[in-house]
Amino acid sequence: MQPQTRRSRWAAFAGVVAAGALVLSACGGGADSPAEGGEGAGTINVGVAYETTNYHPSNTSSALAMGTNWHVVEGLYEFDMSNYEIYDALAAGDPVEVSPTEYEITLRDGAKFSDGTDVTAEDVVTSIERSNAEGNLYASFLSFIDSVSAKDDTTVTITLKQPFTLLKERLAVVKIVPAGASDEDLTAMPIGTGPWKYESITDTDITAVPNEHYNGKFPAGAAEMHWMVQKDDTARTTAASDGTIQVMEAVPAENVDVLKNAGLTVEEVPGFNLPFLLFNTTKAPFDNPKVRQAFHMAIDRQKLVDNAMAGKAKVATSFLPESHPNYKKAETQFDYDVDAAKALLAEAGVEPGEITLLTTDHPWITNLSPQIRTDLEALGFTVNVQAEASASLYSNNLDVEGTPTFDIAVAPGDPSVFGNDPALLMSWWYGDNVWTQKRTFWQTSDKAAFDTLSAIINEATTLEGAEQQAKWDEAQDFLAEQVPLYPLFHRTMITAYDAEKLDNVKPIATTGIWLVGASTK
Image (cartoon, rainbow, N blue to C red; front, side, top):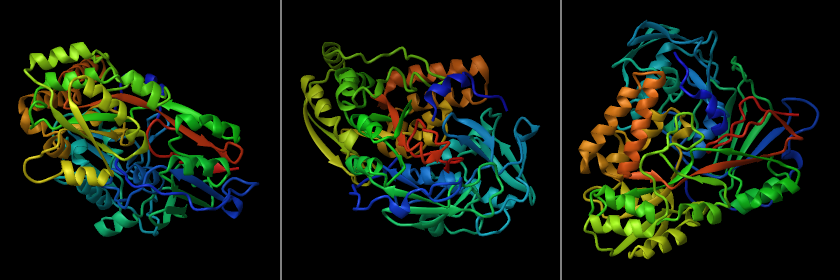
């Protein structure tokens, strides 16, 4: 397999859906703090910014579950999330090419699940089939697979629909779990082959301990790890400052100095994480790309970055962030220009009226809505803002049966938790899945445009080098022209940790905390 083009530029980039708010219960460091004097002793306490009830490795899209599962379940291949370099995990080596559309992969010798049972090729087959099942959010990542079978107990044969140059990267999406595990058990508390194993999962706390059967490259570096659910930014900052937690996810920009003054190391990594503006393309006037472009042009995105994000983000000039190795500045740009936006509306024959702006209740998203409302009202619209928990926003407004009635929505997203190849990132929101079928409805409202983008992406995955990059460029230009869903900006991800108590913590550019290979001192 060839490395992705412009890989070296990804070092700058490095490295969905949760709701509700929890307040940190009163507790201090004490016995729960990492023990001094020896690698692998004590506890690592992590403050996380999201919550979930779904840990199923074959279908979760939760920022929390993705981050904790990195430590518990493995794929055949895994990413080092700090730089997206891919390494052999459950696989003993690279896929062996039998033909351009057939590969064989051998399992790591002696690999066992955390319950002590051997990993077999049948477990791999079942896991891939679970992830690639019709209707699964992961299916668009794996649609290039025609079939998978067990050649013998430790060898898997994968047959592709066509040549595909990103096989290892995509197989990293699939986490291997026992063939006989029920969906209920996997949702509640999966078992895997990673360096850690879950001990308990509650609404507010996830505990893992070392997997004594792990024989891979990165054994657990502490006696225990806790992920404490602290969605409230102030609670998480307080817990980091007083030593209750040693690692903090999603540091608010305004709290960076507070944490540094408390003795913590704070690192910033530019990322793909973004707020997107999503349109109901079945509803006039949002069925017109010119109108969608006008809305983007009417929003002062730099002002959003400067004020709501304290400068810790970069205005989107393409679907991919500038730090991505395959970035190309799109031909269509949305520099703030109210007059130009009004001209686009006039060209489309649109008279501004009353609209509803839906948002999730994530604090950093709700902080964006006042300015967005003001900017769109300057365009002539009357804007009603409706903030809801993510689960409610999707289930009550977007993922509904019948004709959708909503107008536009602003919400966060970051499929780079699954990988960083452009086809994966694009297929998350623009593939043959729930996003285009039940959220933007772009697959049916403008099938010709949907098919055009799908063809560009599909061809790109059969190519390499400059030819592949030319297709990524084409896709970025096309998305900026169509914008059924499109980023306002890309965030800088900020992580804080106690370097005096932990070794080898690697901040990442996406949601979640990456502590594979980290240890207590």
